[in-house]
Image (tube, rainbow, N blue to C red; front, side, top):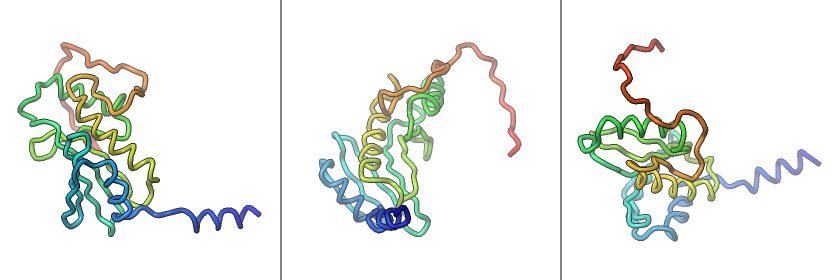
Length: 159
């Protein structure tokens, strides 16, 4: 009985594809534009980009948030703390001198709900940079505030 149920589930389970993702994005997007392996769309008046690579089974939902030069050290450190406590499935990242809100995940695995939740988290993290630095209302416990007047020492970590 269990084997029949599992094999039935496997047949019913749907693999996420770029076309399926576009179908999910279209109803929640203000505008949408497809270009090769990316879909650019406006969500709550914020530009997001969905980038995928079917060969490596990877996807990203990203949005630029701020220029690095426009943020102070406290804001950058608070974003790093948020990556651990309040950004959840989304992270703040730096690329090309821009701070991004980024969701990175295998392409085929997420459910419809997880994709829509990821879009909302990318948006929320983007609009809360500088305030709550959060992608949802959930915050993991611990020291969520940056400590002031810490001695600045950097050491190389062996990997």
